[in-house]
Image 1 (cartoon, rainbow, N blue to C red):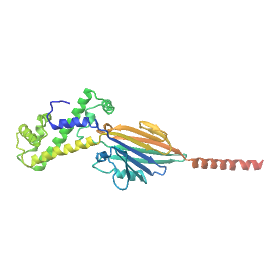
Image 2 (image 1 turned 30 degrees about the vertical axis):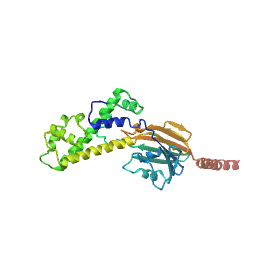
Image 3 (image 1 turned 90 degrees about the vertical axis):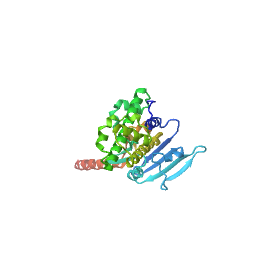
Image 4 (image 1 turned 180 degrees about the vertical axis):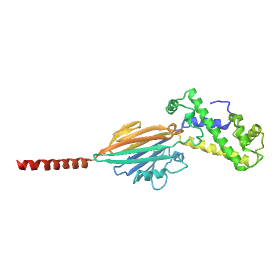
Length: 322
């Protein structure tokens, strides 16, 4: 990070890159999928104060909730659902990190196959420029794995700053267009965009207005100044949302039958476990999946019985003739 940056947006980037440092925030979810498709979801949050984070922690009365621990309390909530779709509806809250759940059950006579997928949607709400523009797949994998090299940090700084500036400028253009003020033509904002050095912009609204007036040669008082203040506050809120998603996550899923395939970190019998932090879903969606199957013994016995009957029907007439 360039220590000469005076704008508060530069400070915000430092906060983003140091989101979880020095503060223990653990969130654990356990989902047990039953053969009939019903499921039980348990969420554990440590410490209990983190229930106000960007992560969708269930707090309504439909969940069985309790507190555990002596000096440091943890929050535990559990609920049974008729199916995964019903559970998925619990996560339709726009003010929280989006979580999408999918479940599929396929009957194939001798076996029944189950597939479960859970996606944490990106908590970066200022994604005006794709991260692929700044990082290769290899570099992004290094970032996810905790690479703190100077070169990679610099690229992340550039990515974050470029997106924050693009968010600010596009909202600014929209505000100018909505005013329909001939003394403040939007064409000048578009034409002089490249002349604006975002690093020199103070976060204070009045200073931003003064800087833009000097670069654009316009007067930006009144309603536009109030809208610029609203833009900076909305960016602050989006960055804070991302910061509040920080912490260590554990996601456990217990499947019926034998595990066939998964991208989980560990497999323990018919349970799979993912260990990750917010880096996994800060800038792109993070999808966890698992597949399993159970043997349909009744189908095996039925098939065996039918075969025995067919064999008997073929052989008995010949034995009688003999």
